[in-house]
Amino acid sequence: MEVRAELTATVWKVVAEVGATVAEGDELVILESMKMEIPVVAPAAGTVSEMRVAEEDRISEGDVVAVIDVS
Image 1 (cartoon, rainbow, N blue to C red):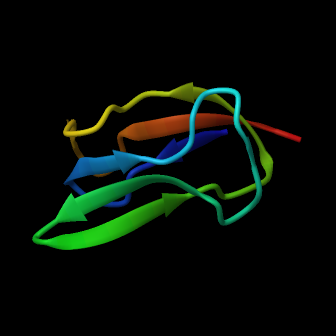
Image 2 (image 1 turned 135 degrees about the horizontal axis):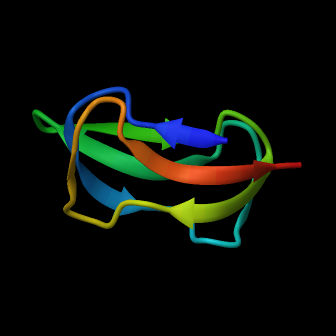
């Protein structure tokens, strides 16, 4: 399952690592836009198989942030 950014922003912090088991609602990354921190959360439980962003990356709305293998 691809997890996409909902807005154009800068990646402030990568919270989850590849191989991590996440629950629905767990934070994957935290974005920063206009001095606001916006979490990107797991839409379902599973394992993070890919993290496609790094801290300080500039991303656009709709970009894939991470991929989760749903359990």
